[in-house]
Length: 352
Image (cartoon, rainbow, N blue to C red; front, side, top):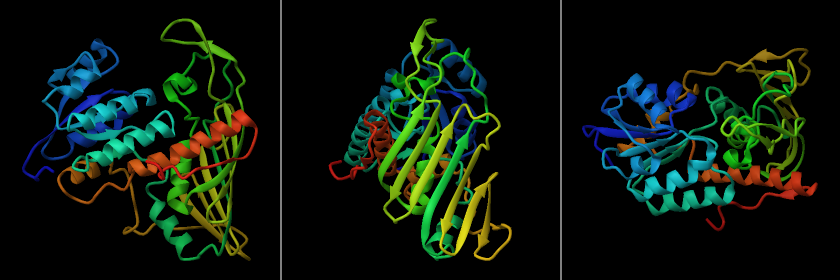
């Protein structure tokens, strides 16, 4: 634990778009926090980031950065394939860890990460949370908990890029299972939000389509099979008794970006364009649902991470345990795609 007077030195393993847009500004805004080091995919890109943000140390590999004594905490901003190895190494080196989402390649790897975090309870271990609903989560949770919808019957989620299929586009890392594992489109992002709102799923059935079999890998210049789907439909039975119907797409041109609807016996709650609205039985239209200031959430990832390191409230958005839970769901979706059957979702924390 660091006192409020002790500086916290942070090393960056990976400095991609989200790290530069979110984590670096968020950390630099905090008193007593400094960016100590960076190791990006190449020495040249690491040096560019170091120059841009005034980071004093550049390492040729993430392993060197994690072992070096010049940092107290590590932000892992890489693609998922390095989240597990870098987290385990950082915790073993006595560093606090803020790991980019999605947590891991699969639930087994996420479980090993959680076990390592539990073995080092003096270290803060946090996963970057799903950001889409942070500002409304507390209000949705209250409305569901207090029975404003009556009994919850069904949940619908629609998430799309709004883009049309581009057969000539190069392979994206999100389409490469060697880099992304079982993570597909925005499946994990939305399931994490649903866990906050209504709890976990118990079974899942999925269907998916990949419309271009192979694409040019920009890292090698050769064609590589597209391993993760362009369009995904998921049906899930929730532990609360409701059914979830979710569709995720990178090829549905002009589709709405992100919306979710909770259907109850007494009212329907809609999240669309970042805002909440409600229609009760007998209403002819939806009415806006204000988010009270006391319930309003937002992006506090870096501030919460540093506060926990200094002995403040423990991290809740997002814990490693929650990361294991959403990876268990993601794995079950992958199994359903492989078997064509409805798959149970095991208790991911039972043997962790």
